[in-house]
Length: 226
Image 1 (cartoon, helix red, strand yellow):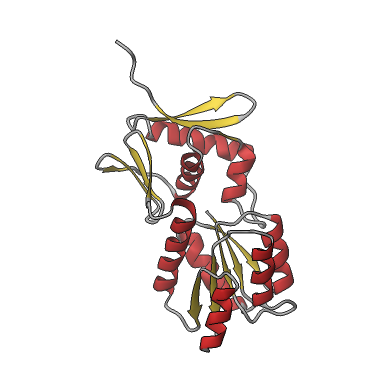
Image 2 (cartoon, helix red, strand yellow; image 1 turned 45 degrees about the vertical axis):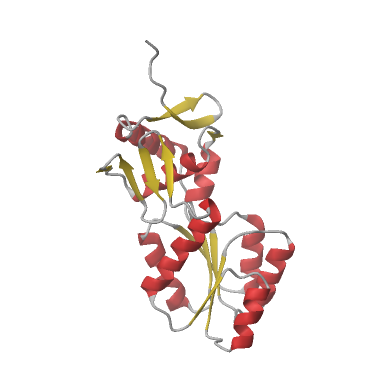
């Protein structure tokens, strides 16, 4: 999952980036409204955390332009403006949630999970393939009652495949979902993650097929006919 933080306070932006990175998200940062508007235009995000009082272009204008383009990216407004009229304006412009500073980090992380879950899956928290279940909120994979030992990166790759279950996913799509603007992920790294996941999913009823020249496909393994 990829998140954009639009925040001009360096200490706050760094703290949020670290917390969300530790939670397994790929995080980009914008320090002004013009940069945020450009990044939201050029890349696909699963969520944006948007400060209203941004320099160069106000956060409300960033939000207005985003919705005018028809984007449904979930937006969590994070601002020091706590007046009722500011809340109403943000929500009327298309914000999905609104938090005022100072805030509780644990609560913010919970709201981030809820907004991403709502955007991807509606009210359903889990993705299923065979006996494999991926809890997108807790970032945890299970095979039946057994919790699988899967790293944060591997969870990210698995999530991309499960969200597109039955469809071919190429390496570029996986990189787009996992990598930030400042971070690269090579083809070899993707292949390593896929190799590890195959081993860990052997008993799950889910398998990852390589479609030569195109990418990878996650599907439920069919029982052999007798």
